[in-house]
Length: 142
Image 1: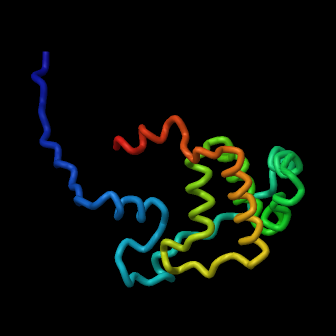
Image 2 (image 1 turned 180 degrees about the vertical axis):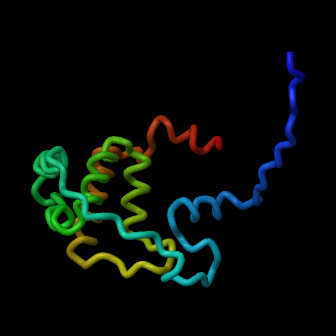
């Protein structure tokens, strides 16, 4: 029987980063203040069609809060809102992220889209008044 041969394995190299830097890297945001918005910009997402389940969800909403223009101009966002609708905390956070520019680099939505998202957010808050999901405590414990 031939004796086992051992080879030396090079250790993996890691760079220690903050949670905020890791989040920015995952979301495609510039990792450093003042980084070029052109070189560190994430690639544009291909146009996503409005899903049939999203059409049905929009139709199920009261007429005065239906995000018709949002669904037409930004179907990907409408699809995501429908997906998150019953995940209270995540949906609220997503709508907040749509309305508040935390990066400082976004142009913002047209006024009609902002009105629709705000109306939808108010309606969502009426449906889920506590504004808290039973799972929120898990996120807070992290």
